[in-house]
Image 1: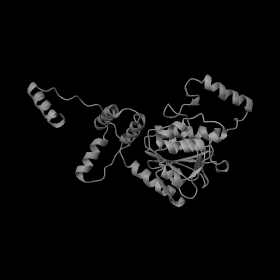
Image 2: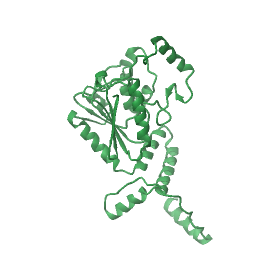
Image 3: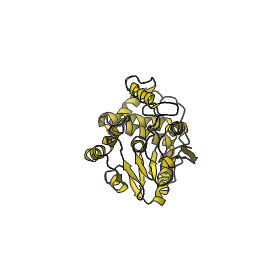
Image 4: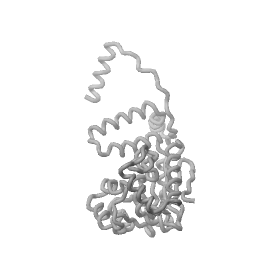
Length: 305
């Protein structure tokens, strides 16, 4: 089995499970994890996901570079080369479309929080998954190791890993990783802000679950939209992104039940119970008289003018 997938409450657990091969993304595992990401995307009960690898040696050690069964090495090399110039329709740079409709199928961005629990080596495609799919990264101090694993093999990679790396950490740190292709440990990963925390191996899943439970208690639609907003509009000028954020917020307060629940819970001094409920479209505001309109406009100018 290439991927273990289970759900507990509002948390999904995804474990890359071929430890005898270093938890690599071979063809079977890539297909399995693609189906898993699509299920997480569509299952409204899933509010957070923990991604890890089996065992204590490898998170994910990369791709299987061998041709799939029944395909010769020569034909496989030709197909990959032709795919650069003649990509199939419905693909992204020649890769199968992922759950988000943009990135590759086995390392997509999904608009739900993903916590990477790095239990061992994250190299090649394993490094890619951390960069493209995970939002919060916890690594164990004993076994976690990181390596981009491309330049030392004579290539720069078919995926967007280098572009993501230079956007997520400081330029000098990113360039050292890319140009030297040296491996580094969890302590260094924390120093360069590639990961959020370093914990003991026996605390890795405990800490990851604590964070996942915290997120699962948040309003699910708002969490989803917060992640999408932060990623989609991070390169947009602040004044324009702010306008989009205001529109997102209006949608949440007008069309979901969680906005009301959050305010009621605060006033009633109790924990909120967020469900992600969607409200039907309501009737429009009644028409105001000229005097009422003038008074309301005057009040609005006093508040926001």
